[in-house]
Image 1 (tube, rainbow, N blue to C red):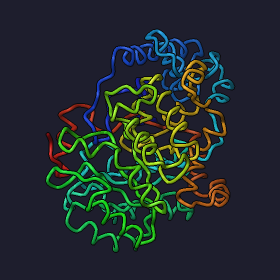
Image 2: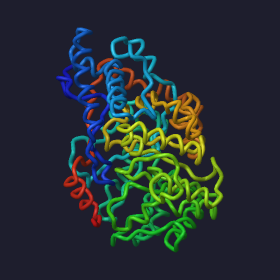
Image 3: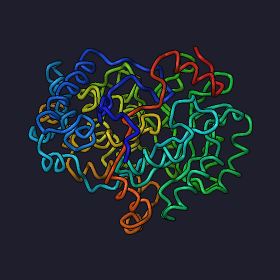
Length: 461
């Protein structure tokens, strides 16, 4: 097989960079992040030499991923970031069995936030290509199931029309019939036609509704507890699909910034206990480090926790915290990552934290999966802040068991079909000669972000 992607092995299998998902201005890596990449590159060359193989062969191996994570640990320790780390034996950089033991897992990976960008994508290789989507998500990663979501746009510039989403789902179903993709229906109540269009979307069998409270065709957003939000929630209840996925955090700009804050989540969760509110990104704001819960902060993850607590919504109730882009961004900062995972589990609940990758924007999600498989909150943070240890049981919940419950997926059926369906067969054959690209597709600069926002009819402030 002739390798088509990065034949010289210049790209790291675990990706730290400034890429955004198109919903926030890219944030460049700081000195520690740059050092982490430099150290990982240097150690990859040295370890490949010691094993007597090419850099490309090394990057494709489990040793390559283990070596990269170990380098990240060293760089973070040098920067004084010790609140969390990627726990993997030091021998894994050279020993194949140790690398496999550290990185392999048997969890169900149910990614609740995936994207396939259709006709109005921003033009990077891979966007709008269903074959590339299938390779990135189902062949180059351990993902078992994914929910295909949307990003906000004017109706005439929708980045993934429901027909395109359904076409992608049908591609996968034609391969295996196991329904590995679930669909969202876009529903922003402050845009003419969206509420009325929900009846048609429901006919496609959508599993949840996706809304952006900070977005609107005129640049103004809404709160879930005001008139527009109430119309949306009542329509959702009438249609019988009681999952609302709401973007909180990752502010597009200062315009309608207040609507990006999760202050309204607890209000509507208490008012509508029969509706599940899946809070995408958990309210995280890029560029704002996360610390222990501070009710006075009023932004980021703390705003979500405060809203839930002030309105008396219990842990493990009808508010779910989703990690799309939040986990990926904070792979660069283990202190913030430890605080985010720790306080979400502590205050939102161990049954209500959901794994999402926000891919295809970040290419294949395998690096996010491998990083989360090995991540652990430090003993110091556990003791000082009352955070739970990330046990195999908790990891499995976050990776997929929690999502399966809220989406009412029968895991026995998933396990039974996933063992031998055509996707599994293709994955097994593909991994005899894998060819991952280790690239990301989303905007990497402010200029690219603004062009992307303009393409979907956004308003910039």
